[in-house]
Each structure stands twice: as structure tokens, then as C-alpha cells.
Length: 171
Image: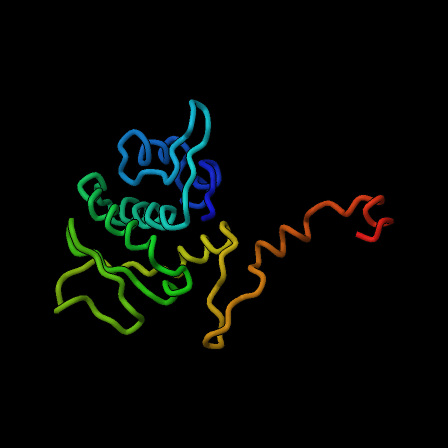
């Protein structure tokens, strides 16, 4: 599993490092996947945790929702995402029903039995995660995956040139 450290998680979530630590450590609203091993070491975050943090940030900033009462909802969402394919989330939305329930919706789905729900699209969040974690993006042809994620190719192109001795040795 790929993890990113606190500074990268801060950039991907749009949260300051202090607020990220507040949410993930002090209040343990959405805990980091790997807590720091020692004082001063960064915590580690999976793409699933970053996605839940991004959704929580949206709920807090755009809808002024207090998050502490939704801790169980975020835990449930994180656990379900751990067993969900990144690619399978593209084109989907999430419906939040109050404090304790949520549901993944397909493109044409509506909330269960016409209940009131707050619905957030996932694609804009997945786009940022795709770049930050070098994850595959959806492709136009069914059943075909990306061979080289964009970030992985860009990182390779930006790496320093091969040393002269390696070139001479034919490596």
C-alpha cells in the first residue's frame, strides 16, 4: 500500500499541517493510517484516508457542518473504501444521510427511498488523489487500464540523467 507523509497529505487535503494534525491526532476524527513512530516523525496516509479527509473538509468548509459528531460515519466510510477499487469510484457520488449512514451512488442513482441526503461527487477528489499517488485514471475503453500513470511518467522524466559510467557500461 502506498502512503504519503503529513506534508503531502496537507497539500492533497487542502488542510494546514496544524489542522491536519488536529483532525487526525488530537481529536482522532479521521486517524492517520500509520501514526508517527517517534516525536517529530510524520504520520502516513493512504489514498482512502486522504479521500475521507477531503470529503470531511468539503462538509466543513462548504456546508459548515461540525465534524466531531460524524466520527463513526467517517470510520465506516474508511473501512469500506479499504476494500474498494480506486477505479471503481470514478463517476460515483456519495450520499450522506444524517450522522450514521452513507451510500455510494452510481451516475443515475438517487438516494434510497427518496430520503433527504447531502450528495457529494467523487471525481474532483479522485483527480487530485490520482496525481498525488500516481493512481490510474478511468479510460474510455471498457476493461483497459492505464499502463503508466501520469505522475509516474513525469517523475521518471524529471529524474537526473544516467551517470556517464553507467552509459559507457551499457546500462
